[in-house]
Length: 86
Image 1 (cartoon, rainbow, N blue to C red):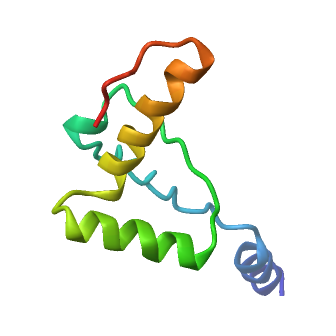
Image 2 (cartoon, rainbow, N blue to C red; image 1 turned 180 degrees about the vertical axis):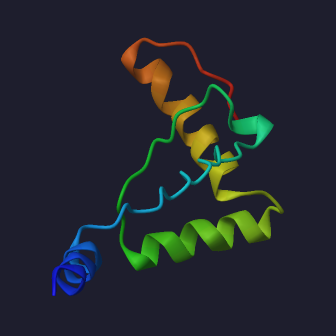
């Protein structure tokens, strides 16, 4: 009987949990053109988004280049030199 109780006690005793290896944290890739840059975003109507897309398409450029051009035109109005980021 003592042997049976010992077996039951051993079977019900907490078992050590195998340690799960930590997953390697993969650093996200950043395009070299974006290194040192910061996103400037806004929410606009779908119509404006389509218009900017059409202007970019018609002029074989990107919306980002168009926004850079617009910001360069805006900065002098407030006393800042154009940034020249297009």
